[in-house]
Length: 200
View 1 (cartoon, rainbow, N blue to C red):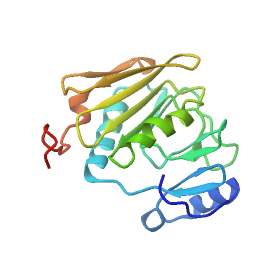
View 2: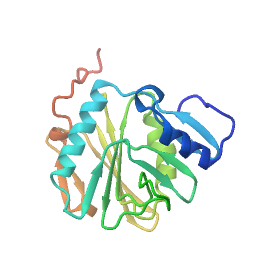
View 3: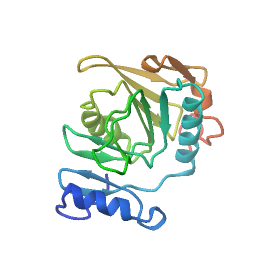
View 4: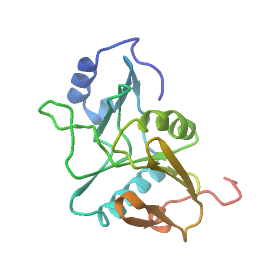
């Protein structure tokens, strides 16, 4: 999250502003406990990774599942977070806020965040603590935009989670709840990365 825009607004005010916003000029905003935060723009690497993830997942999920890009808002009812994950997957009956818009999901099965140097810690620590309160959530993927590194956090049962890292292009990301695997090489296809030694 970046700089705070206002000291406090209501959920109703936040949703009305987001729905009226021009995405090209106003951008998107997260909402948490009365505060609104502007979401930063995405790099070329970020956009390529999101495209690869959407295509890779959508070609593999069952017909009862849907894959959404980052314009699909997600709400965590237990803690009040409203946010826009980079990729969202639902399976079965979808649940939305009880209004006519159908633009705020409540029951994702998989959430993906593509991380950068500035967002990695918040995505892995802060967002995970909030996302894990979604009862339907089974997988949370953190995909590094600066190197080949994917962290897959999988719910085993209750509030027990398994953390597994993928660092090789030959690896396959195992998404057991969706009964599928996605090759790491496919996720990083066409993505320009710095040399392995970290030199720029």
